[in-house]
Length: 201
Image (cartoon, rainbow, N blue to C red):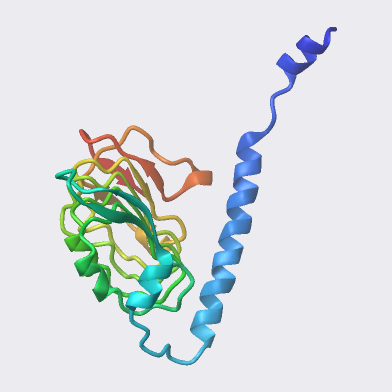
């Protein structure tokens, strides 16, 4: 048998590797969440202009092409409890607010150009936002989300609710479409074209 035949016969267990990675990631997030629960009540830590300056990047032209603005923000692991300041940064397209202590994402309603959002590992009990016309990828993994109300963005193509186990206690319907229903090893992740409904169990 040739080396080429050996390569053709070799099929790595990618599903097994992914499940192992998911298990490790879940354990890490659970440890992080437990540390937060064991700590004293978090002090109020609002997002400030100084933190914004450190986290902003990707200078791009704005819609009219006559001005420039930063379109990417990364402020993960900052112990933030309030992102009210984001209401003024309407040109942001990519936002990462992971691993903070946020309970409210409503300031993001002002970011009508938002394409990509990552809010993993906060204290969110809801992913409710106004309809964001350009949002394509959203991740709310490892929060305390109890339902999928308010997730209705016309261009949403990928949604991650992994680790938000209470979402799956009963059947839920997501009003954004579904070409890919997650397997047992991929629970909470969805690819969502814009035409149908997905049923999450």
